[in-house]
Length: 341
Length: 288
Ligand SMILES: [Zn+2]
Image 1 (cartoon, rainbow over the protein chains, first blue to last red):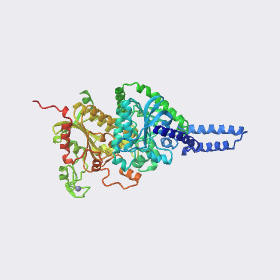
Image 2 (image 1 turned 30 degrees about the vertical axis):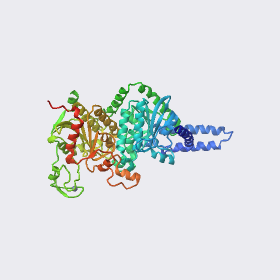
Image 3 (image 1 turned 90 degrees about the horizontal axis):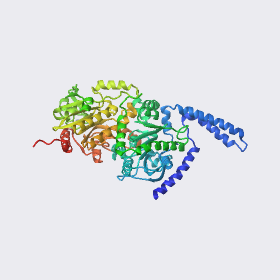
Image 4 (image 1 turned 60 degrees about the vertical axis):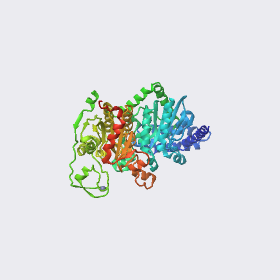
């Protein structure tokens, strides 16, 4: 009961947040000309009275121009720009995917060992009528939710909660949907003291061994071990502008180039885009984003993710659990074995 | 047996090329006392003055672990070289070439089999001397080959870990070795074979957060640095002084993350006992 109320309250709050975010669009540096055009459009709209026919034409012309520029920019995003888009504060987060795609949602909390880590959220609900277990990293959107969710950087408790939920799914034959959006596991004294490495290792192990379908979707940033902990699934999908990397481009640049300013160069070299990773056969599917990225039309992006899950789920559910596990294993074993262009 | 002949042809019987020490004396990096290099080697690279465990080469590790220092190395599966055409300040292919020349090793893991306390065992040793023991596709394949060989021989697998983490130059292929090596551990589990991990200094990053933490028994050498996140990263994040002995073997033992911290001199005996006990059902009983 309590959980239901909470989730209802979260839904209302989310709706406000999404429309608030819609109004106050944040632009990235390479979107400057689009930002200028959209500001001009806003100005014209404010000026336009009941007889503003000419203004309407001008608005249409400017909107089309903005769309063209956006299309051009997003058609050839560099890996460095993709990193910016993937981390955009206004992209839909795990809470948004849950509130839109999952009905009858009951959030589940705690690892039963030490505590409750809100960097990883999860629960049971229905995805298009199919009962599922959902687990995902949540970064938070405003300062207080960011702090509450620790910016999406999980502690061992979070990974142990994820394991608990996956095992629960396994016992009741429910598929597992994971949403990945994290810069990585929390690098803190407390996390190390309680066995961060072991927690991540067991989480990967649990992903690989549960006898139910696991579909992982990278919705923003897939940061290293903290991401793969929820990412060893039957299907790994990425949003078109999401990234998934062994190390952040900034850290990689500091270590290999000895210069954090080389982050864009490192982003290039790491091959961290969805397009690169599909070509390298390390992921299974790319989910298209609306023009200008998921942050411009969160609901469109969320629906696309839902459609992709719906496209994958029936075939996986039809498989015998032993075969499912064997094929999941084979999929990972095949990775990197053969050279791909 | 076809798999064995195809993939893991016995390669070199006995010793790996062992560095001849140039210096008569070695300084202990912990207590700074001078030690006769010859004595240090006899003491398994443990300082006779302060007990500090210095780094061991792959060759030394294998020699110390197997009965009479005898073992058979296996040839490891080849993987695509430089899958991302990676170049930082140096081409990755050049880096590999240089490291191979310097270390006389092909990659960051060596696999061998032989007897420990008269019992068959497969041993995988990570080479910190090869690009800081970083994990790439070659290491993943090596660990998988070690697990397969153990299953073929119905023997236990012992791994000595030493790693700075992921092989960044292999990008996501490096990260995917975390699930891939975990699959290898699962295969051993399903075969009912013991999997023992000996964590040596240092074991961090992706290696620590995958096969290095999934042993049936978790052993570490004294004072070995073991953890997921690097100490500098932690300091920069939490802006706090790290506690005394943080991320050291004894700290992990205190925090319930290890079964035991074992001195190098006792390691072979402990391993021999454990595999004899855990692999009891696979060891043929002596004829009556
Ligand atoms: Zn000493």
